[in-house]
Length: 126
Length: 126
Image (cartoon, rainbow over all chains, first blue to last red; front, side, top):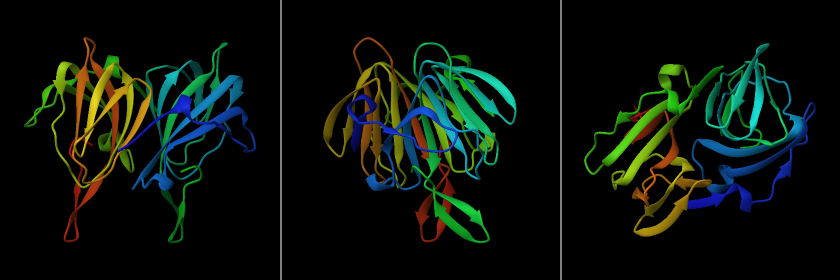
């Protein structure tokens, strides 16, 4: 059994178009022998946000700390610690930290996704 | 996008051999259209425990609140809020609440698992 804590792992800055002040910790992923899905811990600094984008795999999210705003296909939702979210495949989404505390959340993804045309690819960040 | 909170959903007692005082909330599962994996919230009352068992699919776990003991293939580990665990397929495991607070954790499972011989079945509680 593998046991890890986010605060004992170094965070890696997320370098993607449209990202502001986000770091990621890959808590459980393919390199750990995870068979099906990866568990990542994200920290969004106050005023920061994830990219506004869509992709053909889902997110399952748990908000660990702080508060924020989740956009989904143009609709805004307030989110806070304790919320669980399902972001469906192909929906446009973005997470923004609100207030003076970082927004921390777990975001799980499948290890692989279907690119269409019969191709299957590793999911980024898994 | 689906958003839920564990404290706004009714907990269902877990009725399995070897369980003591555990309830489950299926936060995101197949009935919500989850494509690949399910996110469940478990509450283990003080003195309670999950069954000591093994199965051929993994768990990915996040400890939300409280403290406990995780057994994995005969080795005991102290766990507390903030810990992330990977329970590998076919490893024997059990979670026990320690102290006077409930142990709360998220436990994610794949929607389906391979039963061997080419058969694939829905994962219980997904």
